Structure formats: C-alpha cells, structure tokens
Amino acid sequence: MRFARLAAVLLLVACTHVSSMSGRPAGAQPGVFRFADGEDIDNLNPLLSTETLVNDLSSFTMGYFFVFNQQGKPIPSLCLEVPTKRNGLISRDGKTITFKLRKGVLWQDGVPFTSADVAFTVGVILNPKTNVLTRDGWNDIARVDTPNKYTVVFHLKKPYAAFINRFFTPVGNPAILPKHLLEGKNINQSSYNELPVGLGPFRYVRWSRGNEVVMERFNRYWGGKAKLKRVVFKIIPDVNTVMTDLESHQLDAFVRVPTNLLAQARSIPGTRTIGYDTTSYGHIDFNLRKPPLANLLVRRALAHAIDVRLMWRKIDHRSGYLSCSPISHLSWAYDAHAHCYGFNLHRADQLLSEAGWRMGKDGRRHKDGKTLRLLFAGNTGNPGLDERVLLIQRWFKKIGVVLTYRRYPTNQLFASFAAGGIVATGKYDLTSYAWSLAPDPDLTNLIACSRIPPNGENYMGYCDPQVDQALADALLHYSRRRRRADYVFVQQRLARDVPFIVLSQRTDHITFRDGVHGLRPGPSEIFWNPTQISD
Image (cartoon, rainbow, N blue to C red):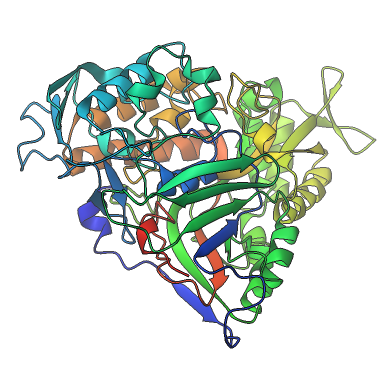
C-alpha cells in the first residue's frame, strides 16, 4: 500500500477486556515478555526464512531502513528519511534512490554500523548462490555507491515504485547483515543463521530447538534501552497447547489467535484481546502444475464447490473482511468489483462434465481411466484448517471429487524450495495458508511467470503474460493513478483465471496479559515498536 491514503483509514480495532486479577499472576516474570503463535521456525535469518513469525522475531533483533507503524505508515529507523521525489532522495527519472543513514548505530557485538554493511548485504542478496526467497526489486539494482559511511545510493536499471517493500524493511524479508562477520562466508550454511547478530534493541542469546528462542535487551541500542529485559518466543506447534499455557500464565501473549479459539481467549481472566486489520489474506491455492488443476474449468468448478461465506461464519466467526481480491481493502489499489465464485454445486457439476470428468456409478469423477483425486496439504496443530478441510471434503464428495488431507509440521510445509518445502516444491494439489503482504500492492513475486519456484514464491505455477506486463508497468511508474489501473486489471484477470480462492482479508487478534503494555499492532507489523513494550 501507499501510505498517504492508508494513514487516513481507521483500522477496525476491537478490544475485549476481562476483569483483571489483582497483582502479578503466578508464573509471570518481571521484565520478561513470553509469546507464541502455534508454529515452529526454520532459521532466524529473515533473509532465508519463509515464515512470518521469523519477521516477528526480527522486529526485536534486526536492523531496517524503515518500520511500519500502527497505521501502516513508514517510520524511519536506520534511515533518516523515507526517499521521495519531493525531498530529492529519488531522482527525477526514478532510477536513483539515496538513503541517508543514522549515525552512532552499533551492531550487537559493538562494531559500528556503516554504509559498507548495506552494500555488502545487497551483494549477498544478488549472489545467485544465496538461497533468498526472491530477488524482486534487488535485481533492478545496477550499482550501489557508498560516498561516505552514512550515505548509500542505489542506482537502478529502471524505476522501482515498490522499493518501500523490498529495500530493508521488515515486510521485505532481508535485514541488513554485518559485513565484518560474514564477508567471505557461505550465508546458506553459516552458523550466523542460528543466532544472528543484528542492529535491534534485543539480541539473540539462545535458540533451544523445539523449545524456545531467547532474546535479551541490548543496552547500547541507538534508540535507547528497551523497557523489557528479555523476550522469549516459546516454540509450541499446537494452538490448543498455546491456549493452555496462556491460561496458566506460562505465556504473556498469544499472537494471531485462530478465530475458532477467540471466544476461549477472550474469556481468560486478567487478559485483553485486540483485533486489527492487516494486509494479509487467507487463501486456498490450486497447483496449476498438476494436470487436473491446469484446466481452468476444473478450477472454476472447485471454486463453486467451496462455500467461502459459510466458512467465514462457521470457522472464522465473521472475523476478517470478505473479499475476492488479494489486495487489501485498505489499499488505494483495491478493486471492490473483482468477480467472486458463489457456492453452487450444480454449476460445479456442469463445469466438471464440460472438462471431461464424468460421474461414475461409484459416485466419483473419471477421465481417461483416472479418478479425480486431489491432495490437500496443511500444517499440523491447526484445528481451524482441519475443520475447513473437513467441510471441503464433504462438498467435493457431492460432486465426485476425492480429497485426501495430509498434514506436515509448519517448518516442513513452508520450507524454501532449496530445503525441499512441501508447498515450494509443489507436492500438493490444494493448500491453504495466509500471505502477509507488504504495504505496497505489488504481487509480482506471488503470481508472475518468472517467479515460479525456484525463482520466487509463485507456488501455484500461475502464468499470464498480460498480467506480467501490467505488473511490470506498475513498477515503472510512481504515479498512483497509473499504477491503480494496472492493479485493477491484474485483479480482474486473477478472478477470471482463479489460480486461488481468497477466503478473507484477515483481521488478526492478539491476546495478552493485563500487565503487558505498549502492544499496538499495525496492518503490516505486530511488534513495530519493541522498545515501548513493557511488563
């Protein structure tokens, strides 16, 4: 999203407060913030990770040019200003972007941070041997100049209007790396990924695999000492266990509470639950690289056989914003008129028959001697998804489609292509999760032909040259009007081609102990203000 519009939008924030308990509850630790979100992690370097929660942890520990506040507005962090054409930090032709760096910043080992670290990190990202998720935007960098220790100049091959998403922001994955620790090393195999040294207000001190990640306050942080002494992420891959630990005060916060557990979370004494609109969207993906789903008629049939509204009411408890577009309704680029596929099993039957899949006497669809069998891949410890798939299996059975459900540990399901991740390597027919989008509405990495793995996160294998052309045009121009026209076209094409179904644009929830203060999650970041969180 662009920010002038977003800053004027009131987020739909709901707050539930349950009567407080007197004093600090047993189990709570002074100056310590312990949280979980029902997932495990793959590594702690956001450059290489595929998981949103690693970005959450990096908000405490790593260094970025900008962060995004409660309204989604970019706030300078390691940079003194957000570059624009108006302030002269973006050239008239849009191909030169200058970043003025903050002085007096230290790495957590005490070494001064300089422009050399930024230039070094860009080189690591552009190294074809580095297992980055995407090089969108980075590949447009022709040269990086460092005229002094506190100035970095990106010379681009062409304008890149979505630079705010990619160039060292918490939503763009890569954090700035320490040149003095990593120069000459293979970042893919480096022990650095287990306990990164960063530029944030907290430093990693321990990762006990399968148990917890511990971060302690870095007292020489440029922005002043954080109010908390320690932050602990508890690795609890089952959301029901997370809820139990929250109730017994072994946790201080449950991040992204599943909607099926919201009523239970809101009833915990001495806690508050707040909801906040996000730029994330839940979705069901079709793997277009699999023959049955490469057929548009089959995808449209399956879309008609999934009752999105019923799932929104029954499973999501009306949480989130019903939409058929992946672009947030908070965004200036949102198309409120994108086509939706209504629940219609009769129409689904017709489309499958048109695609050559005939109903047999066994109640199943057959074509060329094959039965229409599909695999739905999901993650363990996700009862909301379990319930969702159970409904889909029932609907699909009515139209003769056999749907098998297989669950994997979260870090295996979403591991990178190089690490053999189930989704990234296409070992599924259908899957469901949520994308946490950056503020700018660029969707290139998720849907462009050139971003099909191993070159990006277009895990569906969707490819439309006209969509690619519109995406490319939108990145070449800083004019919001020109870009919006491109993105409306993209949304219309996605609705036509249905490579995925949007379940809803998410309203996320966090439940936390009354004694915790300063949590003000925004649409792009939960922990954008880590120094202000207190116990």
